[in-house]
Amino acid sequence: GAGVSQSPSNKVTEKGKDVELRCDPISGHTALYWYRQSLGQGLEFLIYFQGNSAPDKSGLPSDRFSAERTGGSVSTLTIQRTQQEDSAVYLCASSLDRDYEQYFGPGTRLTVT
Amino acid sequence: GDSVTQMEGPVTLSEEAFLTINCTYTATGYPSLFWYVQYPGEGLQLLLKATKADDKGSNKGFEATYRKETTSFHLEKGSVQVSDSAVYFCALYNTNAGKSTFGDGTTLTVKP
Image 1 (tube, rainbow over the protein chains, first blue to last red):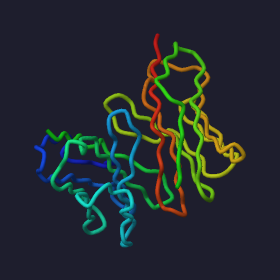
Image 2: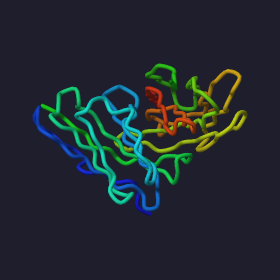
Image 3: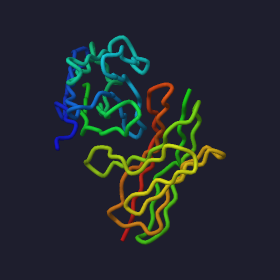
Image 4: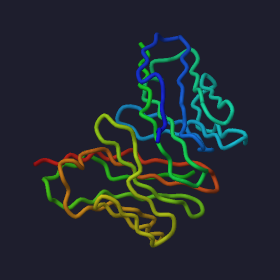
């Protein structure tokens, strides 16, 4: 079956511009996660959605970052006024429920020039 | 908060060598533990998991045992292959917090 998909796969943007990254989770998965992977670093948790509950935004690094999940399915991560330090691979993952293993998408490589 | 500490890489081994990648954790409660693998040019995928103390996860010849007394989940394989070259991430899932914490990853290169 279809896995987690993300778009775009690569995004180059100028400093100060806004970007939107999209994640399509596996159908039926109620939990959705966003992570950031900087070069040579581990995964940094950003935000977590579970069903209709309020999202856990505790990992968002600043108020320039926001995310939403429409209809309990597709999610969009928005970064406003991008900075060079935002350059990283942004990974989305979904799972059947909060306690289950996570399935990762291929990521979006964001480069801020 | 929760944390995961992995053995620093990179690790370079010859084919058929024995592999150990150390992983220790700190967490409240009783987390589930995972190893994920990221092959070159691919996304992360689950390699194995263990959900309670003394459980052993295994897959593709890799094994890891959930050791509560030493808060460890070391990854082992008896005979590595070139195709095992990848980045390996240790992770925990804290049910109470509802979130995962990942280690920094260990890059393994296996030479023929």
